[in-house]
Image (tube, rainbow, N blue to C red; front, side, top):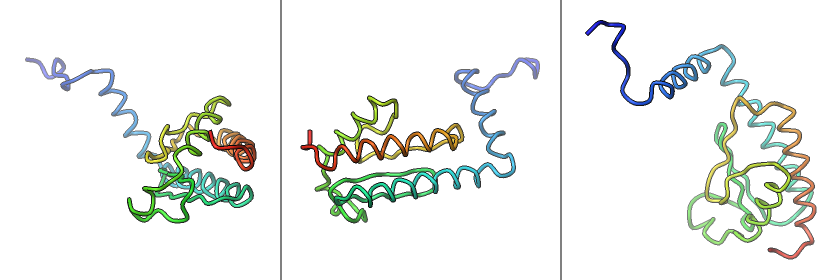
Length: 141
């Protein structure tokens, strides 16, 4: 078989997409940009959570974030098992209604990517502020 006839196993389109992604990640400044964006989202969400009150905890590692309502710390299952899943569900639904797609469970991570521009982060934060203001006094649904 000629060398140009050899292809990787699996879906060749998915393989090409994966290779393109790995090349993009090698570009200088890529991870720094992702870290800046993630830190910006974290800082904004923390500020909004402080302003709107109520116990909540935000954890971030790199571009992964997790938001828990009803707890002040997230150090393991024992600290998040009693998290307020109804409040998170209400937050999720209201964000989704406004076009912000989050993980449907607070036990999953939010993933930030290079596609998330400063404008998208600003709109996400503005929407989160609006939603959390409404949830501050609204009965949990």
